[in-house]
Length: 580
Image 1 (cartoon, rainbow, N blue to C red):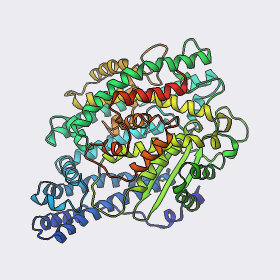
Image 2 (cartoon, rainbow, N blue to C red):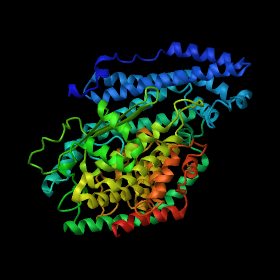
Image 3 (spheres, rainbow, N blue to C red):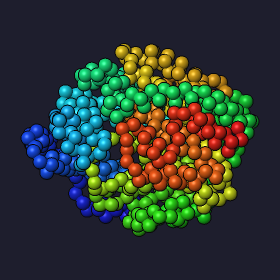
Image 4 (cartoon, rainbow, N blue to C red):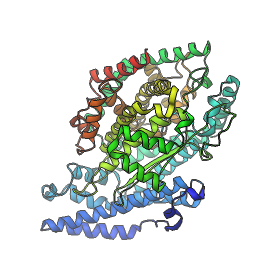
């Protein structure tokens, strides 16, 4: 509604697209100045120029992202947001030569006092994956990905989580009526099938394009390019291979047992895909009416979970940048007037503006059964963003930070469980069990998809039959839903990987969430060790990234997710709580 939109969005002009010629001029001048720099002050001028340019690009894009959340049906705004992302790719290509010069210069050691430990590596990485020779292909890649994200949104599927059905569609999947659930499922599959040929065609086009990108950028294949673009080291990817094997050994065998218990509770002898989201005859966890308005309950819970940060959330509440709405209950024909509108589907956004010290935490039409875990996960990620220094050493975009951020998110989600009673009331224990079951089910699927992403990134041909054959073999090893009669999947098995958002948008990065989850579970946070988790999270917020993605977490006291003992502890933490 218009009155709920912050005043600045209604009054402030839209940011204009960055001027490519102006960026090229600045980059060319800075490159020349760097090459002839004599004093440290000369070098600092160049570093500031780069920092100002990147800040401008990030600030403009983030502003448009926030505006788009508040005004999701403003097509002009959405188009500008998309165009800005394309323009950002062009700007990075203009900076490539400058970053190459910096990363390979003998003056690198003189920069150590002013830049982060990964600055030179990041400069070389960005330059080698954003050059002018491939920028047109990168723009097309982004457009193909956007097409799939739109297809997912159009049928109420999440563009962030695999097979997360949102909006009002989800309520039909959770109906006590099995016939109603079946109709909802058949309707969803029918809608997906209408666009299936287009989706398959665009994925094959995307796959061929990515093979071309890797080749033009000078890499052996797209896998090498993608790992470089994401800032993943060979050591990290090698450890991921070990991680997948551990999940396959210790977690995958539990999946069939979890589903067997569900069918037993429901007295279902022949389970179908439309039964997956109906865990028990009494439905899913729902919030008590005393929890509304949720923003106030959240702030009260923060006083218990993260007292020092509570004033920040109180300020956000006063400014209107903290908003939480959930879906009503399935089969609820009573008064649902206290549920905010959910016409735009399930969405959420977090953002922190370091320059203006303003934060946003916005959630709309989130399913009640996942809302509190998601809310505090996003809170942990937001606290991580707020902890980053606004001044100090110069940095470049570094994906290592995303893993640390996810660890902070899962840490806060587990720490918050002590306060879930204020949200769920008598259903608190059930809500925790539901969440842990969901997290357990995520792990094998995340690993299977990562292995599929690696296969696709290395594949020398773009053949759907080859891809489907590989996926069937991978899926069977991880025993994911869809691979047996008693373990149905929400999508037909051959197509399931195509509906995973990360395979399209962020190949080889989707596994990070599973790694972060196991890292946190390895502390055994469901018992007395929650104090150890508090201390580790606090340290995580106050140290800097290393070259390897897991260095920061290790220095903060988290166990290595690649150790067998950590995985076994993670499995024990969940299995013990669920009495598996």
